[in-house]
Length: 123
Image (cartoon, rainbow, N blue to C red; front, side, top):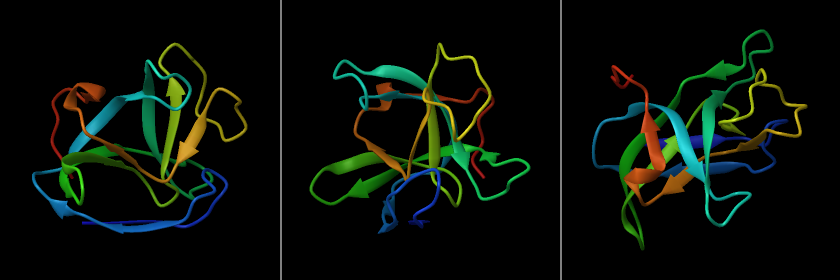
């Protein structure tokens, strides 16, 4: 699988990555992020696109082989990457919110840091 995200208003990082797939992709609703706290915090996550009317899309997670780490889980979204907000923040998704942040992708090694959508089927 390939992940390509160019620099954009959601995330400043441009990436082009290749991973060996170890299983099917699944829809994701939350991840445990260590961005703001070393103990981690549960965050809602969506994919982000360049569609001005509706930039949100489904965030996905897929088990992959990651050189140097072995098995891992890559979290990916839209053409503009991923958007995160702490689960207790109840506001619409918005690039201007100080409570939200964007990333091109996320790589996790622990499945306990993932909360999948119910009735999950990959796309």
